[in-house]
Length: 542
Image 1 (cartoon, rainbow, N blue to C red):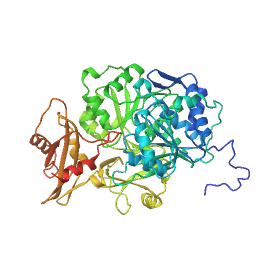
Image 2: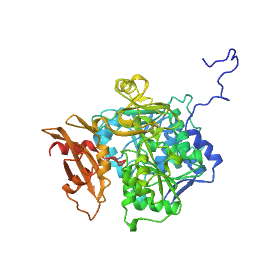
Image 3: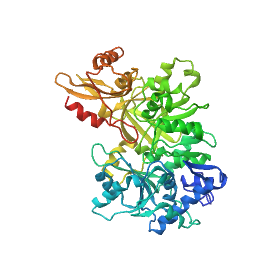
Image 4: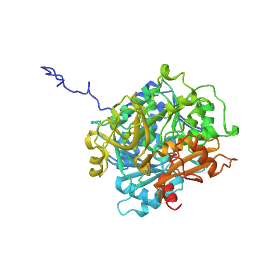
C-alpha cells in the first residue's frame, strides 16, 4: 500500500532522509540567528553563536569524561542557563538527559541515580548536599558530581567537585556533535512523581521531541523571535520541550531561579517576555499579587496553562491583566501538552466573560503533531459526545513516550489496545472538545453518585476570599465518602466553614457540596500541582 509499481533507485539517502531531532534547531540557529540573544539570566546574556559554543563544549567535556552513546547524564538544577545548555549538550555527545526534580527526597534521588544509571550529574550547589547524600546511599557505582555554581544568587561552588565553567573552558570548541542515526534513539529520561510507589522512568525519543517543537509553534500561533520565560521546571517534561523549540524561532529564553509574581512581572516589563507556560497556581499568583509586586506592560502575553483545570474565575481575572490564556493538557508520558483549547473566535467571541472562561477551562482537541486523542469507555469504545458521559482520555501519536524504562509490564499496560491510557476521566462535548472531570483516583463516590472534585473546586475558587481549593474524599459512615475541601484563603480574609459550604450550595447540588472545609496551606509539587494524596491522609482522620 502506498508504493508505486517501480521504485527502483528511490531509496533513503543522506540527501533525502535525516533522523528528526531537536538538536538540528540549535545547529541551524547558530548560523541563522548567530548574533541574536538566546539566553538571559541576570547579567548572563549569550547570543546563539555563544549558546552553541557552550553546548558544544559541554558535549566535549562529557565525552572526555567517558560519557558515550546511550549513557545517562542527570541534572539537579533550577531553570538556569546550564539546565538549558544540558538539553543540547548532553544529547550532542550521544548521551540521554535525565533532569531530576530538585524537591525530591534523598532516597528517591538515590533510586533515580541507580535505576537510570547516571554516569555524571550536573548539580547546583543549593542541591549539592541532596546529591551527595543520594550518592552515599547508593549500592551501585555512583555518578560523578559536577557543580554548576551560581555565585550571584549566593550559591558559589563548594570546592569539593569539578566546576562546570572550568570544565567548559577546558573543552574542545570544535567537538563534532553526535547526531542520532535513528530518530527512535532515546533523547531524555524523565521520572514520574511516584506518589503511589517508586517513580517510573519515561523515555523520550528524538522524533517525538522534534515534532512537539513543531506542533507547539503552530498551536501557540508563534512568530519569529518570541521572548519566552522558563517557568515550568525543565525537570518536568523537559519544560514541555520549549527549550528545544526556541532556537527554531530564534527566540530568547529568560531563565529564573525562583518563580515569584515580582520576577514574572519584571521579566515581562524589562525583557519583553511574550510567552510562558505554567500551572494554574502561577495564574493565581499573578492575579492575587499586590500592586507593589506588579509592573505595567503594553503587550499581550501568551500563556499555556496545564495541570489541574484552572477555575473559570481565575481565567476571567487573568485576561483582564493582559494575559491571553490557552488551556493545554498532557502528561510526562506525552512530552507535555498534547491537547489544546483552540479558540473559535466567530463562535465564542460574543459570549459573556463567564461563558468564555468556562470554555477556556476545557482541555480541547489534539495538537497537530498528534494522531488521535479521544475519550473511551472501559471497553475502549468512543463515549457519547454529549458533555455528560464519562470515560478515560486515550492518546495516540508520535509525541507519546517509547515506554517505561526497565518496566515492560507497565509499558504494556499503558499501551493496551493501541492507545496510551492517561488515567484521566473526562467528558467530550458535541464539538469533540475534551473536558477533564477528574483523575480516576480523585472521583468521589458518595451514595453511589460520582462527584467530580474538579467541579467542586471550580465553584469554591469563585468565592472572592479563596486563593486555592482542593477537594478529596472523606470517609463517611452513611454515604461511603463525601467531599472534603481544603482551602487557602487570600490574606486578610476570614470566611467561615459554613460560609463556604453555603456558597457552594448556591451552585452545586446538595450531595456535591463539601461537608467539611479545612483552612490550611495546600501541599504542592515543584510544578505547582496540589498533592492530593497528602490531603487524603488528613481527610482520613477527620
